[in-house]
Image (tube, rainbow, N blue to C red; front, side):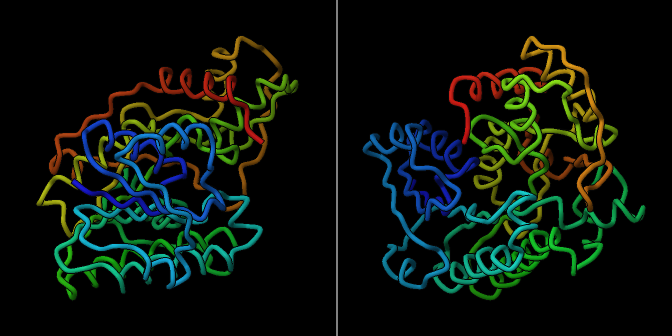
Length: 321
């Protein structure tokens, strides 16, 4: 099988590439390295003869013109993500995320199968408004609380992408699966997410130890489980044309308790200083995975403690700047 990973040098992309290569597939990674890293992890993967790495800007039509067609699977993972990035330059978020999607839709060939990476943020406004239940399934109405707030530029770009892929796939004769990720974490995910942030804070000896949004709840999904779900969805004929939630619904946790777990793993005991959550952050997030289970038989396999330990160990070894 030939797989094309757009944004494949990033967090989820690299883990997915490793899995596909381990399963015996050929993988081409395209990335502009604005967020994905050309580091030792990518070098090890690049050394495999089944892997090709291409540097390219997916907002530039010339990049697409140079790519071959005839792929068995295509994964669109490229996006500007992270609350800090979104709030600092929401116009860039909309431009990059939307152009990457629209160029792919112009380029993809009939008969190919595309995975579009979306997010739980598309319905988060409904949770905050109290009109969307938690755990949350795929049938709830999308809702963005305030389209003028910079934070919601990301959700808006992904909601547009969902509509674009579902409708264009039917019109153009290719298959698509929309996967909405819910708090995926793990090694090499950068420093702008809660578990890496806490890990780095603990490694640097922060005392007191700040915990923004300590009273909020999340259900975290280790990247290995997210990759397993993606691989299964792309192999399931009945998943075509569907929106599917990807996450771990077994271990919903309070952020304050998460901080205690990270500190226990780190072997330190600073004073915890609870703080306000970032503006617009939803108070609770947990997916209903009934559809994913029905389509693929997926079950989360990595416990929160196991995942936090492996993530902390990676950041202790590698650091992050």
